[in-house]
Image (tube, rainbow, N blue to C red):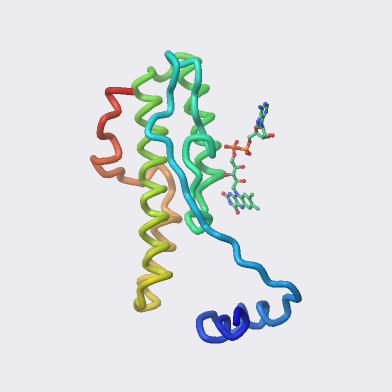
Length: 144
Ligand SMILES: Cc1cc2nc3c(=O)[nH]c(=O)nc-3n(C[C@H](O)[C@H](O)[C@H](O)COP(=O)(O)OP(=O)(O)OC[C@H]3O[C@@H](n4cnc5c(N)ncnc54)[C@H](O)[C@@H]3O)c2cc1C
């Protein structure tokens, strides 16, 4: 069943891998995000996977962990204030988590032109400094 499905849906190279795998298994892909990154009067700080576990196709999880910890150090060193720290890590977490759901749904449940999948991949490869975060990713951050 799994191997015939591979023939129907995967590129030939991937289907061949499925056939050659002696005991194929299915991995459920999930994501998770916390509504806040600071708790208990800032004694608990969530960063990286603890703040948002992205879907693997975002290829952004290690980037998030590195970016978040560097932002935390900047806050602790007084280079940025608390509000800027919250904004930086929350807008990134919210944006990438939502993109992971969106492009996952597009690739799994929609039949699109190949160029659209390439555009999704290129979007996820945008350097952090060039990402324009939508307004909604900053909603409610003043209350954290
Ligand atoms: C199989 C696999 C493949 C992956 N591939 C990619 C990839 O290709 N690209 C990518 O970007 N990301 C990938 N990731 C995700 C990436 O590894 C994580 O997003 C990243 O490591 C998260 O970093 P983190 O510091 O937030 O958490 P972690 O790396 O999980 O660090 C948390 C640390 O806290 C420690 N810890 C836990 N509880 C306690 C405690 N009570 N006291 C003290 N220490 C504690 C843990 O031992 C751990 O060392 C992959 C993950 C997996 C599992």
